[in-house]
Image 1: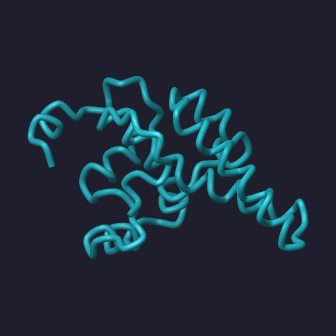
Image 2: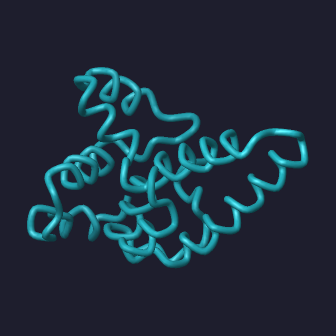
Length: 137
């Protein structure tokens, strides 16, 4: 990790809610939630109470508003890609004979799980990437 980032990281002065401060602090100390997370991340995550685990692992605003929530947070690049991914998922689900409800549920769950790490990378690491899965692999 870059030492300059560690020295200047203080989300208390950024005008963020307590939930975002908690998320950012947890990510800064333990890393991002990856598909193959570190043992430290797993241990710290499991030690949290259920409410804090929910706050860390999901985002209700992104669940119900999707790309609009990403735009609201200033992540327009990721919002564009998320829209395209939503249409792709819907097309695949419909092509396989699935229902509209399945496509909606998949898209909502995708949005709510990637929003928190994406916003952390956007605000703290100054990411300008179009990759919505950045930091998760």
